[in-house]
Structure formats: C-alpha cells, structure tokens
Amino acid sequence: MEKRYPALHIISLLFKVLSVVIVILGIVLIIIVLAQGEITPKVFGSTILTLGVVPIILFTLISALILWGIAELLICLIDIENNTRITMTKLSQPKETPVIPVSIVTPPAITAPAAQPAPAVNRRKNRKRKKRQRRWPRANRVSRTCSTRSCGD
Image 1 (cartoon, rainbow, N blue to C red):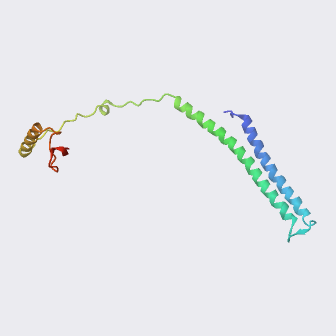
Image 2 (cartoon, rainbow, N blue to C red):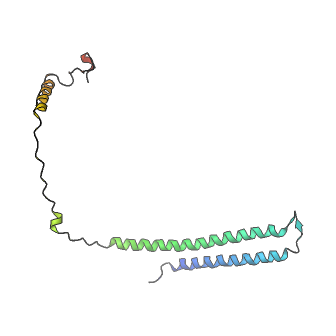
Image 3 (cartoon, rainbow, N blue to C red):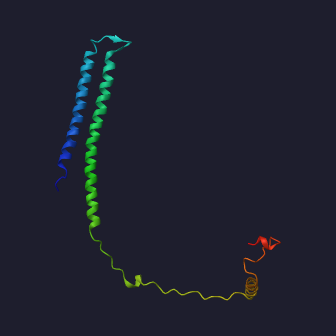
C-alpha cells in the first residue's frame, strides 16, 4: 500500500532532522562558550560563562522540542485521516442481517389474570359514595374542614 500525503511525510522528516541539528549545534556552541570561559573575567562572583550557557541550553531544548512536536503532529494528522477513511469504508458496507428462527420471533401467548370480585363491604361503600356524588357535584360540595359552602375544594 502506498503512503498517502508523501509531502507531509517528507516535511515531518525534515522537522525531525532539523531538531537533531539544532541540538548538535547547541552542544557545539556550549562547548565553545565553555572553552572561552577560562579567558573571561569574573563578574559578581560568577563568570560570564554561566550567563551565556543557560540561555543557549534553554533555546536549544525548547526549539528542538517544538520542531520535534510539529513533526509528530503531522504524523498524527495523517494517522487520523487514515483511520477516518477506514471507518467510513466499514460503515458504508452493507450489513448482513442474521436469520432468526421463527420460534424466537413469535412471542408466547400471554393470558390475562382472572378478575376477582371486590368484597361485599367495598361495594356498599362505593354505592354510598356514588349517591353522594350525584346529589352534590364536586363544585357544590362542602369541605369537611370548612363550615360554610364558600370554602369549597
């Protein structure tokens, strides 16, 4: 299978090579500054050497890490594109429907439980309640907590 986006692969490789070159140049520059450190005079108890080496080390490390990170980011983007294409092709393929036996598809017959008659005591109470409701509709009924008809439900 051929690689897609060959230019991005080349750019990523160039960033990685440039990162390694910066680290090598940083090390060479630190060696040069350290070699000249014996000649430089002392300032405030330390040499100018330490004032020159620390920024070189920081610049070298930060720039090398940034370039290496950009190279890895390009590779990551290529991988994301590849995974997206693979997912799209898998989702666009028709799915095979499994054959289900008829006995599993047909639900069993469900029988309703037999209704049981309410006890005789409840029937009598229900009749009385229905008679009251017919005599006094809910809007005209007096609440048990109120003594007048103005405090209805």
